[in-house]
Length: 417
Image (tube, rainbow, N blue to C red):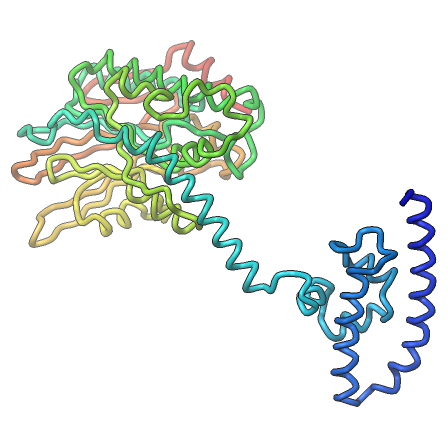
């Protein structure tokens, strides 16, 4: 049927429907206060919607019973639809032309579960099988020196903070270097808006940045166990990689091993997540499972708590001395117990520049720059740890102090929006 002929038939049907509606208006007045008549009218409305759905002059019959189409071809006023059903969607449900609320909810849950089953299968092949491959039996030593850096956020990493951290790594030659989550940022995969001036950054650029950092760490600390703990931003990448998205065209590989050079630089991936997490709360719990224990005395986890006293929250969770990041706020919390003796938890500051949060956090903010240092005696269970704060123009550790070079200052200024 040509469009003009179809339109003519539709206009004729609309005119005829209006005549029927006019006759019904007077009849409807007689049903006021009549329960049986009201039930019959409701049934008539449902039947009328089904008629519109399959109307021969409805150019979209078989799949069109929209509100607009019913206003044009229906035999009853829309005020009755509102009175009996509340809205047109519920009208469709009553006529069996749309899923019930429960059915929709069940189907959506099944769809989400199917999606995350696919994510979990992808993670098993491309992430989880590369975990714990480069353990150097560090926890068998009598004394462990551990340096912990968290929340670098790739290109947003403060150049001066990174300079100090690498120098301290060279000085201490720690048994363990722990990159404790959020080594990358990935605003492209975030529900948050991108920071101004950084739209040129691609996801692959960020991966290359972290890969190159791993190379520098391995060169600086050739005998150390370098742990890469998956944080919420790396978790974000794994979820996104599971989709065949156009943004991934620049990735030569989808495995964490190839993306971050784990094998090239003997980087030990710490990831205990299942990635089968179809809800936000389940994803938070899944990220919380990424932790590593050193010498049965000290635990490192990126963490998910944003509590005001996150260090206390984490210590109460693990009942063991340890460290976490995520909050970007430096904290040390101490406790004691008959069974364990003294315990402490260190929430490390961020390695990222303040520019990373300038659009999200008020100024001044509790966020601070720096990293952490821990000395662990596994045989006794003793832990001593300290924060190494990196101020904008100065930092100090073990009797040595640093001030930023002109190059670091210029690079930091370039990060500001």
